[in-house]
Image (cartoon, rainbow, N blue to C red; front, side, top):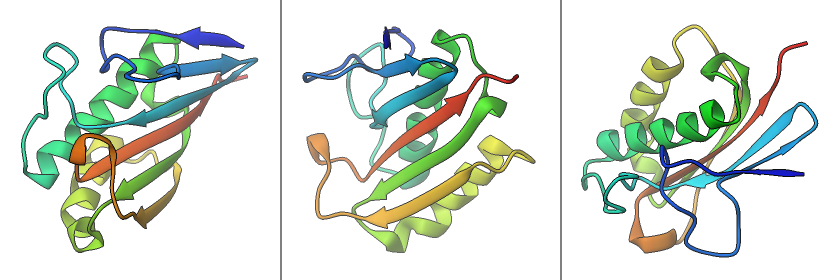
Length: 126
């Protein structure tokens, strides 16, 4: 198990790694919409929060030597599924023709009272 650490995603604020590489598989911890450089919420707008989460995920993926197209699954956790459509617009633009598997669920709360958190699994190509 190789921990992945990067300044391209918010620093871990607990007893976890930003990502963990096991063999050819990268597990990216849930990324909240904090700017890595300031550790502050990017915005209260769900679209901007969604974009920041995805950018943070990509930062960890790239730090492990992989790329966006290597992401095979994402988990999206939202405090209000009424925000699904705007999140999905950002998500669709971010991934383009690449369509990883995904689950999206509503949760009661998230760290630092954010509206969204996204995690991912990526696999090195063979």
